[in-house]
Length: 193
Image (tube, rainbow, N blue to C red; front, side, top):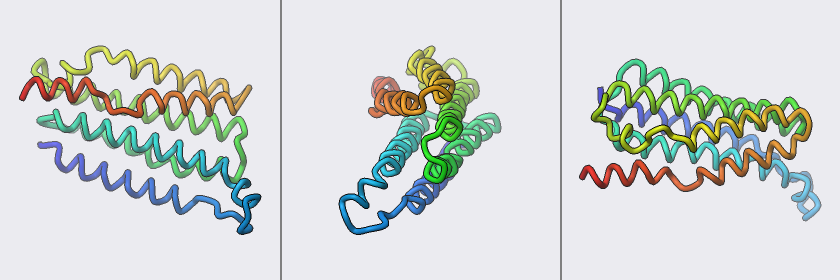
């Protein structure tokens, strides 16, 4: 099976998740700067979530650009990633309604951690089905950055019960570290062509 349908499904789920998040954005109650200031925390949470979804989507497309075939294992790993992406609107809405408390903030991190682990499982599944000749395998290697990212998410989840704002800062720093798509994949693809 070729990865085209996998890409199309991912595009659709990502588009729906982003649409749901934007529809959930709170509107200022009054047309003043004070009204706008009141919704700034949720606008920033939306921005962080949009960026995180965009990072997964962007890196997913780079990964599939060097993927030649998929199997059932790859399909399930991709569905796992999409599951966690589809939960992002839920946790953002919870944060909007309950505030940046410990459990909603930790839940946001659990969803990000789940997406990160699912993404790594997807990478490993593609490498498995393509074997030693996998372009992805030669580009990624041990993927220390991905493991460090998962550890940061895990630490932030625990920290949310002590200092939720510190957790959000870790989530933002982790997103900043991944903002530029993984150049290793692009470089490996260029070398092969």
